[in-house]
Image 1 (cartoon, rainbow, N blue to C red):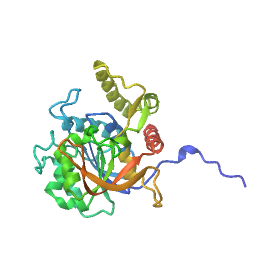
Image 2: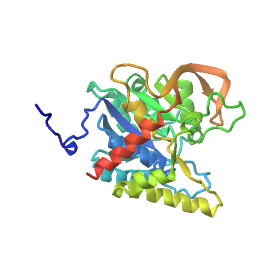
Image 3: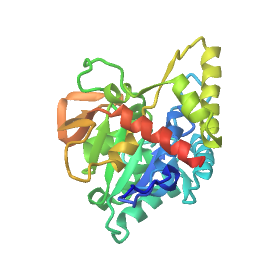
Image 4: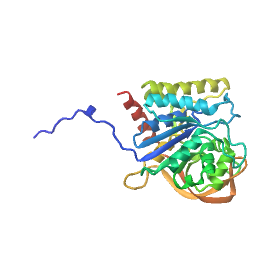
Length: 316
């Protein structure tokens, strides 16, 4: 008997949600946040409950408006529309916490508390933070019980093998009070992707152009934000060369791509004691805290190829 010939086009990507996600990022900053958001919204194992736009530091060399969180939410809504996402897109507080242990109020804070404290759906809740920790820290201050009901994945912090006097990392300094609350005070389960790891998530410009920008309206929109970044960089004599760092994209595979067999992951991590966060947003290496999971290496091939394939499927 001859085998039945099957047209390849009849097979479709299907998967059931395995995690609940709240995505919190400074989408009006580096466009890598928009890449991460598109990847997340196109990933069917993620039940995305909300997208939160967060603020960005005001002392950066590029122009920042007085409403950076609102700007972030506007850009996130554009990506959400292209991806067919119809859930809430919220703006967090427009600035960092103004003093220790005082929450920065926003509807996003209340949403995190409601989702964390809601009757369990059976799916674990992950909060993914690729920028300042203002919203999750404020939610914890208002309702500490959320610590037992979610996992926080953080892009930020110095590498643990960096010199003691290395410059504090950008995201941790965006709201030092919030970073201190999460690392020095809270008992929230934390998974960290430090600078030494996310800095290695490099992708060439030509691949982003061929496999994202020129594929469909979603890719073109995200690429338009990179073009704006390049224009500004050129104005201050900065040349990014041939690559961009997709530093926020590990959030997706860490939360959504766990092995169903419980085997070792293709990205490597270890459990270690965290350092306390000092007043500059760096590590106080003389003070160790609780145990956290720290990723040392990310499977870039899995992460980037999955993103590009999902962008391509959106056009079919």
